[in-house]
Image (cartoon, rainbow, N blue to C red):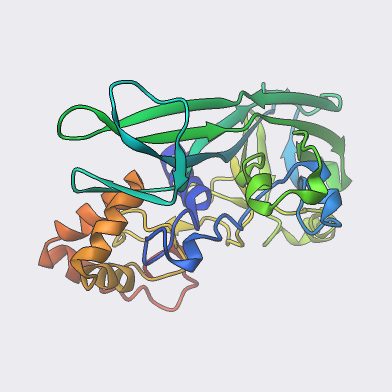
Length: 349
């Protein structure tokens, strides 16, 4: 299994839509983010009559014997609410009270309120094909951190307050016999985090208790391989078509022809997707063309770049990479003629 290739594609899924051009907190598209693969608390899902999912299901087929071992790894983003605190006058110690504001400028540096994200991974132990139905609960604790912003005299002039809500969930795995000697594996990922008065809560509040950009990586070792659900062998076509997937769809990933790994993605992809070699790095919108986004960044005003730089560390890295790009690197992004075969490349085509 080409683990590096698998993780590169999985990270595209993980950060799709994390921030979008023009990469500024003030833009509308960056005020309404994280629409892919979000699993809300069940109470909120019920309050929204199911329009917000609380459960996802993956179902796929494995051809294998008793030596086959299956591994399941679920990944998602855990949001962090970044608030800014304005204080009446510079202080030597962190004050008990402050005024929450959308932005602050201190020592010529601009700061914005934002929703950051932390990567979370839940890795289950290996399963054999004859394993019973098993449910694995998991949780991540809440947290609150205050970071002082100091002025040129070393006094505290503002605050950055980062808050994470506790997350709770469970992953259920079921393996059962299917036709033609195959085995069917079903994985259900559920958000069991409580949310009081869910009917009165905003979507932003629910997102802080949600799994965002949820996806899963399934792998098999020791005498087994997955069956493509998109292009199964003819004799398995009917069995493959009967698999039920909800919110996620499994595709083969890694080296073309290797059937040891599947990525269950909330974004529709073909088997064996690839990152285009011309792509210089993440832009968080892999349905766009890297060259177009890069040229747009280059045309930003100094003030727009200043705001982009202040939003997030990931946005700052995009800007720095763009500003340091050579003419040869830019020309390379113009594209490559790949023939008439179906393109599997994400990002620049």
